[in-house]
Amino acid sequence: MCTSDVVRRSGRRGWLPSARGRLSYPVLNEDYATRIARDWNVPASGIGHVTRFRVRRAFLDRYAVQQAGGATILEYWIPAEDLPAFDDAIVGEIELVSTFTPTA
Image (cartoon, rainbow, N blue to C red; front, side, top):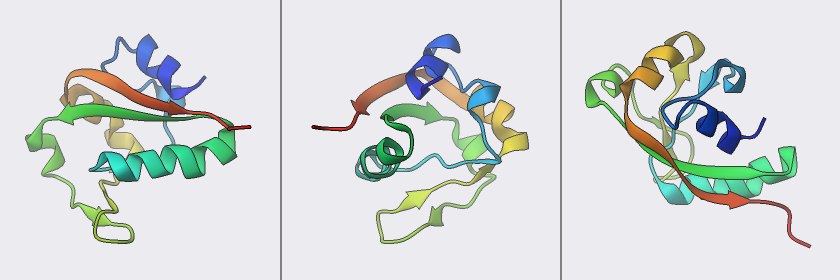
C-alpha cells in the first residue's frame, strides 16, 4: 500500500501500523522531503510522496532534531513504539503535497 493510500485510510490523521518501520523520520523542510521522495523512494519502490502536517510541540519536544547531513537535512527520529502517540499529536489533516514516479 503506498503512502497516499495509508494516509487516506487513516482519515488523513495518521499512519497505519502496516506503514511503520522501526523508526519514523519526519523531516523539517519540503526540499529535503522532495529529495527523499524523488531520489530515494522512487528508485526503491517506484513511487515517492511528500506530505505536510503539523505536530503538537509538546510531543516533539521529547525528541532532539537530528542533523542527518547538511545544514538543511533535519529530521526527528521517532521510535516505532512512540508512533501511536505521534499520530495522536498530529494537528489537523495530513496533506499530500506531491507524488513522484519514474520518468521515461
